[in-house]
Image (cartoon, rainbow, N blue to C red; front, side, top):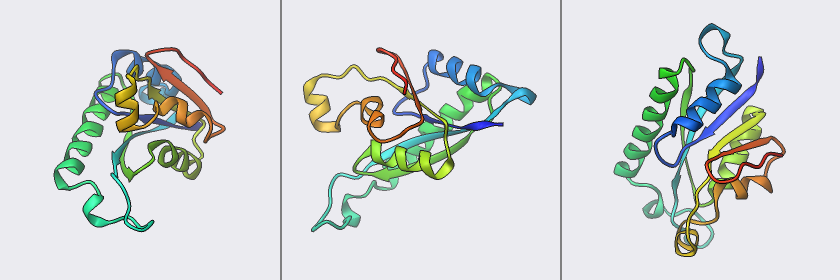
Length: 150
């Protein structure tokens, strides 16, 4: 078995991302790595350093996040890849994904690059692929924009 793979989704899984995951994880009986699809639901702030329940994702946001990972898993299953789902909640998606990668002993994180503007980066935070480069020692495969690995 190869080290587990985390597939981080912020929207629907692109064909390029699904193809990449199927190549590195393997498919069907030949699947070599556990695959977990991860989405980080945004926590919008804290009160006095403590997470305030009113700032946590609400039921509709959690249901939307679960639907997102369910669609991503189906896309991967259509290519023969078995995957599990995980929805996290955090103010800092990069920190949450890096922590999960450490807990699972992941060898690779696959993430979609976002080519966002300044306003979007201000509101949503930095590009997740870039944020992960400084927080983990596993390979980062960024699909879309420019690919960087470590």
